[in-house]
Image (cartoon, rainbow, N blue to C red; front, side, top):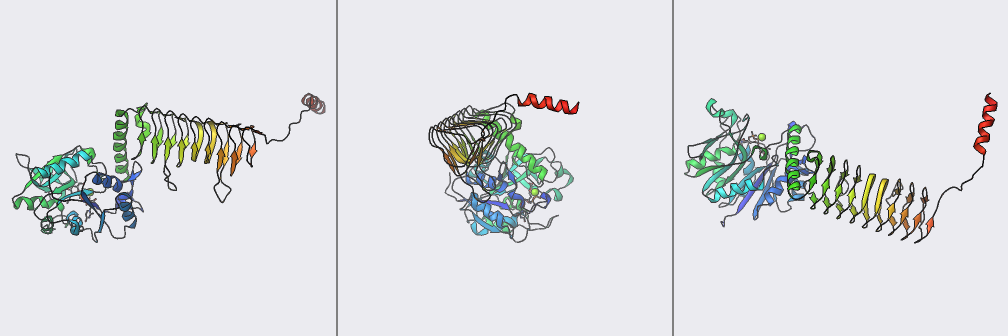
Length: 456
Ligand code: UD1
Ligand code: MG
């Protein structure tokens, strides 16, 4: 190891015009987290690294996103997009004279930590500049990595500046580069803009370092790690690659997926051992699923949405779905059953509680072992405020009941089917709220006879 400091500079200044979006490109999400958030997480995985993010002028939302994921990161503004070297130099105050520097792009969210580790160790073993490269099926548009017989890097040639021979090279620059130079700022300051785009190319640092007698190296990775997102269709490709990796990791850690391609996970999904997930399940951010939980087909789970990040926790042995919707602030205790067409939001269900059919449980608690009958609605909203329903342990709510919050149903009580409950129910009592039944014997037969007479 080394006593040198390490700075990671993340370039996030691009507006991403080809996204056709009101939001800056790097705020678009993969698996429920912005691309910038993914890259910040990758950078944070390297201990002792100082993180800097270079943003464009007026990008206040991007600034907020940096603070959200990496409160200690420094933020710099690149006033004019004059090229990748100019972008890195926007952070010049953070680039210590004797420190190592890694440059990442915020629109390339799929790099694996192992690849970044390889890059760092190539500096350890003597490279002054090291570049992450990949073999492209179609290298069009990428900078080409020109190497000598021993595999050392000679230069990076941008597509627009490449000769016919150089265009045949398939080893491409991912954009991720690392520097261990006597003075990195001095080298970047020597880069000119005499090229096809008139930009200050970071990639020119390779030739400058070599002229100074330093070694330049390439570490390689799979192409799927370096996908850069410039458009919504590339965003979808990145999402798909991320999901494939996450499903594989989950299955390899003991999760069963009957049709993995139809299961969507989020960046922070936690799945316990022996969880089973049936087809067509979407899991949004903030969801933690305990051991042995069974999530049946066509269920939608999220612990965070635009309004709330209260989380969603499902404890051991619970069953959810098919066709269930679980929203932020939900906690399902062990062995809880949530069945088809049941929605739960901001509610805690104690172990063994059941709501198997057609129910809304919003803003409340349900005690251990309680049974919520088909069609029960927690009427939590009066048009102005949200109120709570407290349902005790062992309670039985008959089908098609409405609990009008705020209201408490005492432990062990029964609510008769079809009741509208507006005031508290005492423990172990029965509440019936229905119109009284009236029976008229023989009425129907007489009615039919009368009508047939009139018609005939
Ligand atoms: C760059 C590399 C190329 C590599 C390719 C991989 C250079 C000169 N070329 O080319 O070798 O194969 O990426 O995708 O580095 N940016 C700024 N400020 C600027 C210019 C760029 O922040 O002034 C950011 C962009 O937002 C983007 C990244 O830097 O995230 C790369 O810039 P881009 O213009 O896309 O470079 P490429 O031509 O793709
Ligand atoms: Mg690019």
